[in-house]
Image (tube, rainbow, N blue to C red; front, side, top):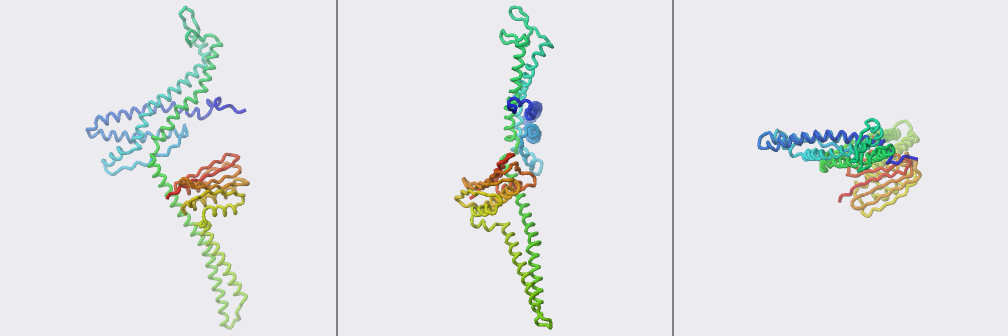
Length: 432
């Protein structure tokens, strides 16, 4: 029978990581607050001089850099993933640098965190010491009594060998000392949850005050998705060039050569040599075959850019995908308003890739494709009854889908526990 979470909490890695964080974060909070207080005090007092504003600018930029230390500690010990701040952009000249620093909102938010961190750090270290320290002392209370043998005299002059007293109750006998040890065990069992509760406040503050602002994060996402779109376009152009060079172009060259040879055979009629009709017919048939193959390759190439079946709508395109799938697929659609062509294309290729993964990697015997459009959002969900364990690892097809969805501010979510089932959901915003 597995041990209950409450009982095994003191022995987990997370508990000791949070304990270490609680101990380390307090001196960092004191140091950061002390430096920030001095810079702020002298900066404000000397505002009328040429030194005041540079000191305040140093406060802002220093807090911004100091926030990186807190982010790193939280990432390493708490698993809190906070995106890094955008690179500081300064305006030219000394006054430009000063203005850029004083107007840096991310730096001022870091100053606010540095100020709030001191009382929060005090609370964290006090709760940690109270639960872990007192719990440990109470746990070894019988050993402490045997080692130090403290004496307490009551109002009647009676001497008690006790280190703990509650009103007239003295814990001076072995049974009562064991009761104290049991209380220590209970406190130690509660300690991880108490520390986790106060550390949770820091978990909330760090992303809010030390992470990039929504506008900055939005700009970073746009820059990244733009780079992804550019790379994707370049890769598509290279693929088209390669396919044309290795496929259709080679077929057309062979077509021209066969037609040229056939013409030479036909021209033999004007010479003394007899015309080889069978040979000419063979060359023409070969040329015709090359022409047909080139047409097929060009059609497939065009389908990779924009599938013609999408002209009939996303629901018809998904039905075609399902019909061609090696795994039985049920398609459910609720598309009252047709989405833009870009969104339809992305949804189609996402569905195609996901169904390919289902057929090749999941071991599934059935799948469901569910598409709906509501409240300005197209939601594509592909569910299978396979073995599960899917994840968007580096270089996998799912990673490509994540990047494809992000080009239009879409989101891809994966729910794939070991043993299945697997559900991959793609949300694509529809802009009017």
